Image 1 (cartoon, helix red, strand yellow):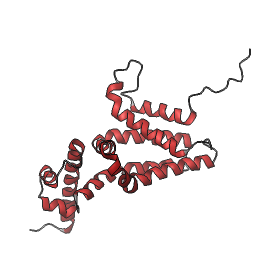
Image 2 (cartoon, one colour; image 1 turned 30 degrees about the horizontal axis):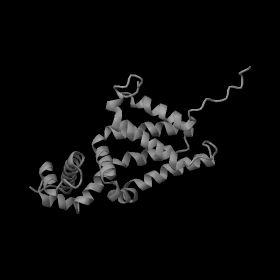
Image 3 (tube, rainbow, N blue to C red; image 1 turned 30 degrees about the vertical axis):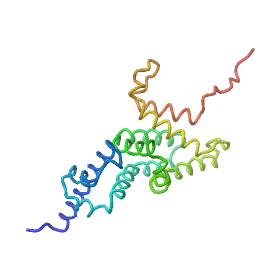
Image 4 (cartoon, one colour; image 1 turned 45 degrees about the vertical axis):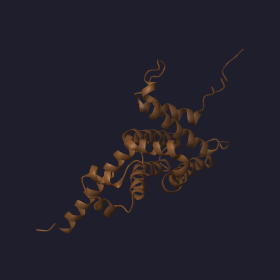
Length: 216
């Protein structure tokens, strides 16, 4: 008996998921250039023809793997831009969610960082245009709106704020195994605490507020 249309659709979905999982594992371990479609097919336990049935090329498969990692970011950006709650509260939630996604999807995060750090000149323009650019622009737009509403300083470049947030999260992701051994670092195994402190510094800066009650 042949499979029903619903069962066939489910099977195709399961096959695509196996292919994506195999590709993510291989790309993260060895990098894009070193992985062949034959290896991805073997890793996914499907035929090479089946891989090409679901994805037009290795490049198409790679972009699909990376784009999937950005799904939560788009959802979190929608929350950051919501009118519910203060911008500071929403920024704290967004910062923590961003780092949490990076840690939860460590495999794909390593793929992205590997390509950007080792082959950024070649892949940078495409990744910016087809994967990350819209999310970055959306983050900058929310920060710019916060400036227009008077919630953020108007003299700051919102793209710089976005870059600092992303850069600090990337550093934590890459360096926390080393940070654990610094006696002054208490947050290496507490990403939520790290995110709260990072958001607080980005929102308030590090200079002490003037003490108007001080008397000579």
